[in-house]
Image (cartoon, rainbow, N blue to C red; front, side):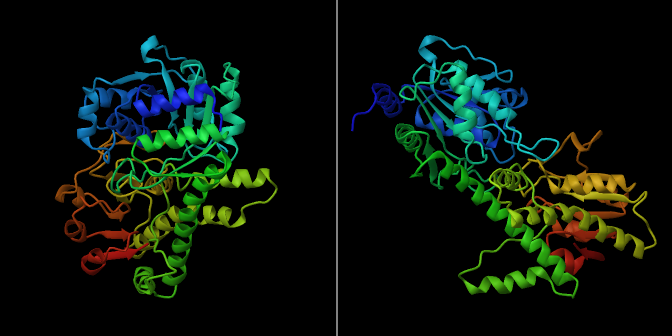
Length: 448
């Protein structure tokens, strides 16, 4: 097989780690990528439109609870790392000897005000790469999106900046698989998927991730890898909504969903456990199904089950508030003026990420009902915008705090929470996580 000379040169640059790599986006995915690249011996330029993560890493501080502080301390003094802020879509200028020939996009893919895919950050990153990389380059998109984005959005933007020669510019999709708060923040134990716009792009992407120590699975084309990433997260979203609906169904007739799940789990095959809660959070599970719904509607075949799961998930915060309201009414109180302490505002245990957190949806509903809402979260000291225009810092869970609180809602199952202390609370305790220690000891326990 005759390979383009540019492909062979990039292959050699990967094998020898002689290329600089430009990483755009310094969230959970981008920071992990920077760490892995440095460990593999690459020179790295890391950029973000936000100053906060850059300043944190430059000072040797971790901007995220699950990212080891030791990583950021080492990054701050690493001779092969350059950190810089970039304006959206702007060009980055490099010395000739540091010009990157590999670009990795790790930016968010959120929703707009109408709940539709917002590719603005991705498009800005594409414009930056199109103006900043070497003429012969490999461009990798790790951000989750709907099938066709790499081919129909990313590649055309690169072409706008004169990168139209497929024998010199290689573009591939390689979805991230990080799981904040669980194991290695870089998820090096999980294989990486790669799917290029051309066979050469796929081959180079495979070589690049293998050079970082990942096992690599190759897909036939970029669209397959894009769809696979959506399936991974939509699978979780649908199952979380399913178990939350089952919680409501069984609770209505006096059956504990957590006891049901314990029993079902004894099967040992054909069943994967998902636990209920106040709803899904983070930048993936509440968001990615909307990307699939958008893609499905474009093809004229609506993803009806996925859309229904989204509605169930959106209802869970309302359910939690309704449970608290009923419990308060039984004590002669209304939500109006009720002093409520939310236990946990991070979207999952042992991280400080509040993106799309169900706790914030609960807070917004309680505030609209006139409750006096505060929060305690050992991972999120604040200040945090609990609801639009409402900024708070985390309270300490001590006697003074509990003495000035009428009701507490257990939302995020942080290991740092002292369950015995929480169980000693004399007021209303609403539990969304099925903690048996709370159920068995709390004076006014209510499951939600």
